[in-house]
Image (cartoon, rainbow, N blue to C red; front, side):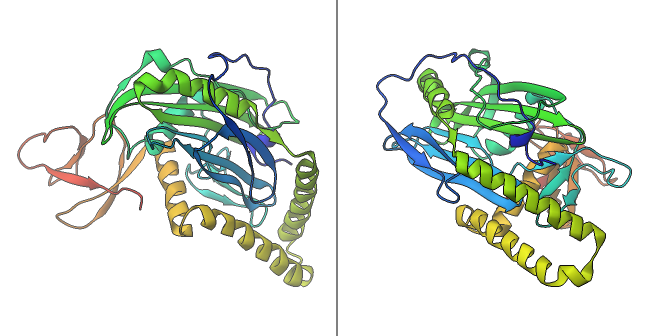
Length: 340
């Protein structure tokens, strides 16, 4: 069974909505880890990322680009986004990690549509960048081409985006997060494209992204390699589930040594594994509508439901309110715990 969205989304035709990027010199970027894909990127831009492998069938694309002046950033995919499995009687709680060992690491979550996922993703993607966000209808029609190969038609597909304007330390910004989600059976996943740009450069950036994402091509040899990895993963899972310890001893050590080496790829992009884990936890909190806080008076950590306001306040009875200003006497402000 295929785990990631790369095997459950149908590759659909697309019509570029913003034309071809003019006066841009392009250069080829190749995945540095497994030579899985190539795509065209603007010459002179800083490019990081590639295909990060966290398991036999858990491979995640993330390519992050920044303009020479540092004012524009766009990202294709995100290593912090896992595959998801729907809640069931054995795993009923959203946010729970569904551990398949060296095959994949999934998270239990109800299916989200593309617009829902984009809105949740934008909260973690841009939270440290944006202040005072306001909806931006002018940029709400952005729709890039699909960038993952697919072999199975999903039972449920949805695409959408969220766009808004905000203030950053560098000035006004336009931020957009686009997501396409697809579900087959109990498994669902998401592909994303997101960017932050000064408002007067948004249209030009959209054309660049459409060209860049549309140029992404997977290496046929890597696709064959991934099929073999999926088969190995199924065999690994079969042995793991049957608990054949006499066979598992040496084989399990070899498999899990591979998994550790794959996870080191993520460490090469994120300075420490803890930082990546915190990013995943942070996104899971956003997916479930939770904001981690602590009470500066007692030092107690407290998870509260996210709201539309920026502040969280607690009174002596433990009641929490979401408000930009103090609700009155007897209330003290909780401090939001941001990812490190």
